[in-house]
Length: 239
Length: 239
Image (cartoon, one colour):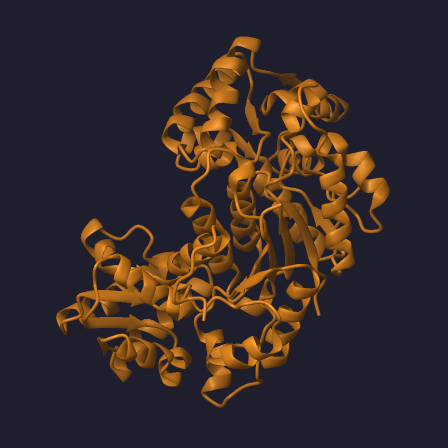
């Protein structure tokens, strides 16, 4: 039997479905049996990650640790979490886990390098929580990139409202806001733009080929790290 | 906490991702926390269902029963199986399960009635295994419909090759074959056409509005039955 991948999802649920689709599409396969077996715990009731980081809500950590324990107890041999913001609690989750947790930001760095980008200005769009914690800034700067972020106004008027629109199922409105925020990062010199919240690729799925060529989709990056893990290859995502 | 839905998936894995997306889209929600928690066991290694029914391969029943047991042991309170052909073993799975298994064909009948169709000719496309077992024919005839099926030649040249193309990731080729098979059922009098294999809606996702209006998507029907279950409403899918 191939190794069982655990997925701690539901943050949000549409992003988890998108992750499962990308995991399937990125796996070389000609029939069902070639695909990676997975156990997905989609728990949309995990308290909002950004709100907690900004000091205005309940911590999601107990729910995250409960999810890690459930997946492990059910036989998962590695765990992926298709939510960037939840990676703020990565160290606590990794300490509580007997199996490796693939790191979404590490997988984004692997994908940047695979696309031939190993320095220069890289834009990052994510939740207020993700950007506040600095996980992308730290990882990217240590890897030799210069990080370009949305301004406070762009976060308040474009990025966060765009993410909220995806969670409410309004992809058309989300696309306008998030596409605009991405263009502004490009105008400020970003060669590539990390879609560093797994809701964002849902809104920008049918962007123009020129825009898409600049996007680095964190959901697809994590899925690719899972395919590498299943096939016994290691990358930065496995720490 | 809301009730935990179990999903026995991976047959195929892309259909399971599509089911998760439709479950999310059909749930009335404005934020993550409004969605249905789910535990999805995606096991693409289940032996091929059609091949077994046609007497040419290993039975998937032990793998299906193992999946049901895993989901139950992990706390699932009802189970959905986004694979029509696997419902040939419904009685054995239901007998082994302490929790209800929502029936995909029952959910299709509920959706037909909800769309105002309660008699007349209904076309069904599915795997050779599904059509051979007669589960759709029996259910539809008992519910007052007349069943229109693809001919043996259409099954061999259009429907089965179309389903195999989806499993191999070639959606464009699948769309031509399955769209052609659906048109032929319409030409023979079918008012509505059941997409009675969860791979088929993946290929016909961007069909014309006229064609889409006639399709009854078994994946969406099952997702809708799960939303009804989560919200305490009962339908034919819960037997």
